[in-house]
Length: 255
Image (tube, rainbow, N blue to C red; front, side):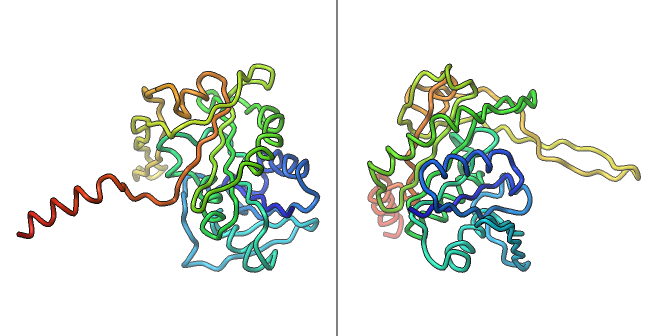
């Protein structure tokens, strides 16, 4: 089995090393193609106005001056010369759950693999980012190999990827694995205005912890309760129950 490993935190991120070790427990044919620098929060973006610069580190490891989506495309179209059997994206420093999956470059790496018809999984390790605590990488490394193997045995539907979040606790504190739905959070991005040495304003996007809806059965509830969350995500965003209602409403409006 040929496995492609990518991420959004960059080629030097510790989570990428963790995922590479996980992949090597599943296969001896592992390829790493990751962004040269941190591309967190860039979602499913492509680099269209700048060249893609590729660096070969040897031993089937590469960095690309581009996004996670760029990395998967470059790997499949050029580096590997064909599709791998599995794309693993992560392990992200911090959870990618609820509405945050729409921002996530980690999830985007798995989305690109899915678009190319490759079984793909995004993996994230929840962490206490407010206090800059070191993530429990050993938790993801402990549970990921067997969990990925079980998912591979179960299979992938067309247009579906799996999003795995490991809780912010040591491996021996994990209480189980749960298949979950995507939760919801209140908007937690704010503008932090500052001034430079010349008194000119500049701005940072800033996360602030907001109240969240921890409904049982959601990814957020599982992570909060020290449970590994596995969420199947579908690329088709169509609200099918709304289609017929909308057709009827527009037909009435159009006379």
